Length: 117
Length: 192
Image 1 (cartoon, each protein chain N blue to C red):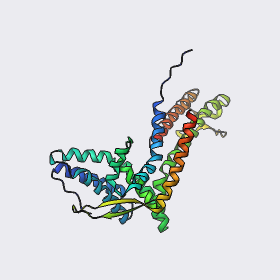
Image 2: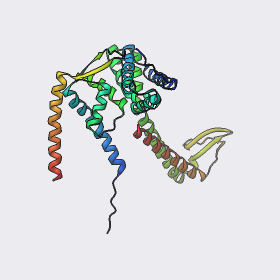
Image 3: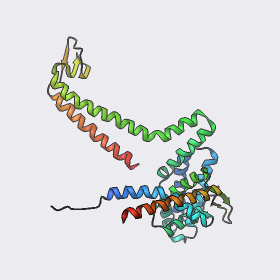
Image 4: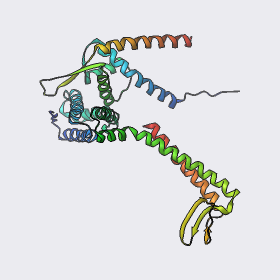
């Protein structure tokens, strides 16, 4: 008996979309742990370090949500152009959250590696 | 908020149109939240476009706006979330209803789907009921006025059943149409 195997593209795309949604906030926290970034700069940084194609407009609502949760702080900084930049930093609560997320990510990674072997 | 001034008039028009759409999408929010969203998008667009030479100003702006996404799509979840916060803070019934409306749209979609499934099942059952009880099932008219479609225990004098065995064909066709509609609605909700 022959089996024709082919990837279920729709399933993989849906799964990848969920993974992206789940990991984007983690990626943002890791990037903001280094230094403060303004919105556009943060988008570029995500692009440099990952292959995730993120709708840039979705990033700002996410940052606002992180701010409401007390995970990031933000401040408007005036520029010579007259158009200010909004800088985001990790709050103390955010740093503790990131440490916890790193532990969970590491445990998950270890578990998957074990299963795959 | 200081607006961006473009050299190319087409770019200026595209920018103004985009912000008009953004303003419409967030008009339900309070003034502070509206200003915050506008300033944030304005800052992003400025950073992405201000280095572009005038010759490619339009292309750069269009590319930036495409990456940001349509405001109607991108801002909807954020507006719904902010509205919940606003409603929670103010206890203003208007804000509470607006927040419910913005967040319940998916819920309503699934409720409609449930009702359509119920109708699909009901039409299927009517085909069987017509076989079991043909006199009481069908499309009934009394005089020239509609009386009932389906099963009726009550059969007053002067009642005429129009479809006969075609009633079974009709309900099976209705079942198919409603099933198709539900599948479309499900795909639409899944996509959203």
